[in-house]
Image (cartoon, helix red, strand yellow):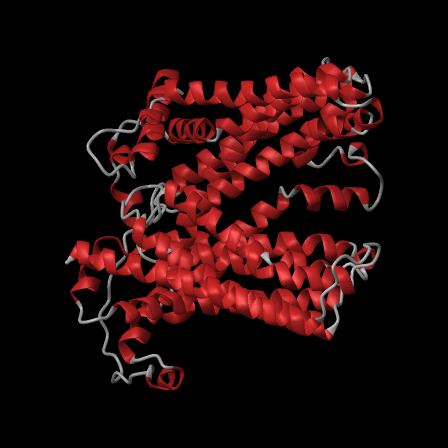
Amino acid sequence: MRSIIVFNLSSVLFKSYLRASRRSGAAPAYSRPAIMLAIDALVLVLPLASLQYVLPKIPDDLIEFLEPITWQTMVGLPILLTSAIITAGIMFELGQSSGLSSSEAVNWLPVSPREYVAASAISMVTIYSPLFAITIGATLPLALRFGFFHVWPTAMALSALALLLGAFIVEALKASMNRVSISVYRKSGRIGIISRTVLLLVLFIAIQQVFNPYVLYYVLGAVVYGVSLFWFVPAIWPSVAIVDLIGDRVLYAAAFSALSAAFTLLIFEVASSLRKKYWSPTPLSIVIKPSAEYVPHSMALKRFGIDPLEAALAMKDFKALLRRKDMARFLAVPTMMIIAFFLPTMFGGSEYTGRSPGFFLVTFIPFITSFTLSSISIGQEGKSMVNLCMLPISTKAIIKGKLLPPFAISAIGTAVAIVGFQIIAPMSILSIAATILACTFEIIIQGFIGLGIATRYPDFTAGPRSRYVTFTGFLLGLSLGGLTTLAAFMPTAFYILSSEVQGIPSFHAINFITSLLMTIAIGSFLSYLSYRYCKGGVQNLISNLT
């Protein structure tokens, strides 16, 4: 493996990702690796200086609580970072369409699979390096304060290794996606399409859950407190090494550190082998067969006020979620979040009796799902967005057609979550009714906000890491969505806290009817504002493209 080729290719991949969504000829300043290093230095120094200033001022009776948190943080960092980069990779890295993966320039360069995997992993780690920089800045003052400085260098080295491990796993997933596409595309019809989507979702979710910190530490802690007993689990070898070092078992720490490095190299070799075997999807062979007579299926939707053109637009987006490999990740991320929210109550349902955790966890599902799916609804059109604007379709029809898939998927996901939480940690009937009402408004509000963001900040770039919405738009929409979520769920939260949650004294208690009226008032007001925001964005987009 040629190191100079790996370095140069990683720099090219890093720049291509950050420059892919630029709207002008000039590349953004942060697309240069030197600028990224400056950003890393800044986010490292800020928490370091802040903690150095704050720690001496914290009272002694409070500072003692930080000591166990410090060493537990250092022990858990490797798994947390691996899980974070896998989740980010599924969300932002696995959006490469089969056309791009077959035709991009790197396929024609004299680059070996091992060199490509190494370069791509390094570029990914560089992009998400601010996470590691924040980790260094936040843990160093704490390690100095509580006498863990002898552990800190090893913990940081193993955390850096964990970042590489996560990047190599993402590279293996990329090649595995090509393998799934090759196998399932040989099957025809809807069964093949659904099978591929299900396989990709299972693959994404399984890999992420294997490195989910809660899953790992609950499974291990169910038998014995700590991780040392399960030294044979490769995913926790870095954590075992840190635990041994804290316990002054230097030889064991060195052994598990070496095993961690060996496991990372093994995953690298696996990813390289998969990349070599499935470098790009096999070109499809199109076979034209006689089809049955076309029968419209959208007439039933007229009962719900949806005309055939709106239904066709919605069905096109539904099919895109199922058929396009680059869209599977947007179904995987909300699914992973639902599973992650279920885990604490599933493993400790009796502990949550009388605490109504279902309400507080279910608020995130309509927020994330409806916002995510609606925010990508415009950018995923690509160049075909011009064709959409040429149709005799009104602004209202575009809004209804584009928001029907997010609304339907969010409603199904929210209903499943409410039923699941009700089985694990039941709430009263009145609390369920209040939660359903708040979730209904939240799905509508987040859909309008997401589509408004999608029309103002679309990313039509077709590249290896398509995002469909600019990073600025995503952050703005996430902020607006978070604020509206708090406002919409506030009356219901006050009602549940003051009437059901055990151990919390009543404060300004409100009854069920009052909470419903307040939810309806706030939800209706926010729905109107978000609809106006959404409608204005769609009108501006149509006027700019026509």
